[in-house]
Amino acid sequence: MNILTFDSGDKLNEAGANIIAGLIQTQPKAVLGLATGGTPVGIYERLVSGFRRGLLSFRGVTAFNLDEYVGLDRQHPQSYYSYMQKHLFAHIDLPAEQAHIPDGNAADLQAECERYDRLIAEAGQIDLQLLGIGHNGHIGFNEPAHALIRGTHVVDLAEETRKANARFFGSADEVPKQAITMGIGTILKAKTILLVVRGADKADIVRRALTGPITTECPASLLQTHPHLVVLLDKDAAGRLP
Image (tube, rainbow, N blue to C red; front, side, top):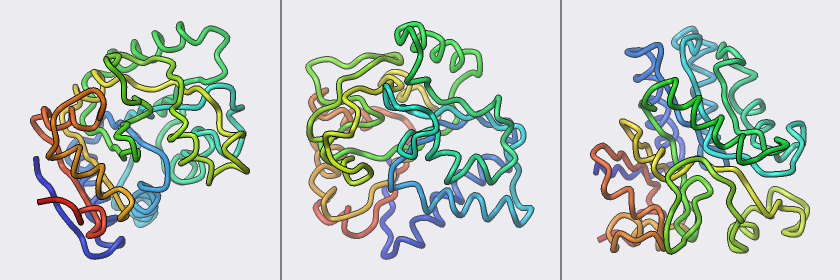
């Protein structure tokens, strides 16, 4: 585990973007696992900047997003499809057929989960998986539970998660109750995991995830078992680490 702490958001964003850009520059056909939410926005902005300056091409990259809400139209402003278009995909040269996001409106959600797992398997091992962390320790939308599912699956979102995401909607009632998420087993198979966390409100869960007992009740704690975990924290998120 390699934990790096930064005294500014700009430096954290630069470090995260440099790690991803460096992989693509040395491995143009890299397979990326991508995340959404507030955490990676600045990292994506820097990747777009690198592309616009001619320093980076995504033409050979294959990308798999972690998750998508169930029941939101793709064009809904809070769908993760819309998020990725807004913050990354619409601004770079990644071919549309190489940018994969689960279909939360599929007629058969179980079949969609199986299809997504097949696509990931056909692409080969994910080279780098970008992650954030929820206040309850979820990664992707793998919520705390007595047991965690290895593959892509439909999950009932915890009320804590829905309340946390309400800031992106009009109210918590508007947040979908389910999502499709990449499974914990798929996440842990990535060659490198890049965990990025910001803010004092995440300091306690960062401590639990990185130094506490490994338990499915804190899914992010399973990252301690990964052979190549890189953690980028701002000073507030790192505030409760030993």
